[in-house]
Image 1: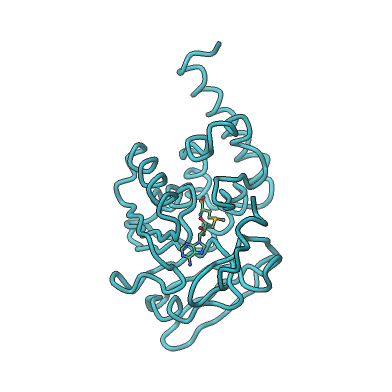
Image 2: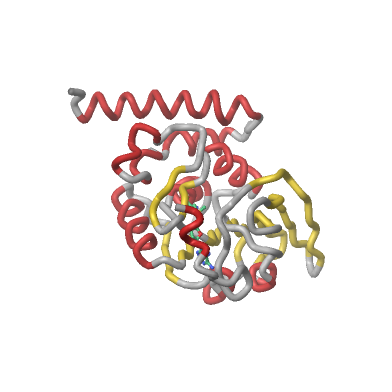
Length: 229
Ligand code: SAM
């Protein structure tokens, strides 16, 4: 059996392979993003029975019908936020906490909102165990944003809504960037919005398939959760 140290060494190698073959090979060039993807151990964010799949090129189930996103999508969305070390970031959809950990490496402060209290609690614990002191996880309907701490230099939404929630646009700082999957329930476009004064410039980036954003400015909960398990 491998000792803990050997296991960590194996995970480090797997992570390096992940960064090279799944992320850099697909055109992610930002060195800061690549460094964050190398640094954050994805395996501590996946359920124990999926440890062997932690560095696979796919999303994985984390319970409640939710997923930890594919590593490439995490890296791509992060790169599109164009983060600077002084930025304050809002994430909607904490899930496992993995994306929040990546953001924590690249920004000054991260606030992450999750609707399932148990996911929020588990993610908080993992983030704390990794020493991510600049991340705060909150429980609530993230389709409303987190107005108490607005505005944000960057907002990332990791669940899909039929349209960009208006409160999120309003909570973007001048020059702020928002990246979110938008569109029908099962497949969407990844959209980036950049705020300049009162203008919001929107780009369509790529096709994606995210779990639904359930909330006042997202989809209604129609008991759809089971479909994602
Ligand atoms: N970023 C996550 C990670 O790194 O593991 C993956 C997020 S998962 C694809 C989407 C998450 O959004 C789920 O945990 C889901 O419960 C959450 N979610 C859906 N609607 C939400 C809402 N209105 N407010 C907050 N979280 C929401």
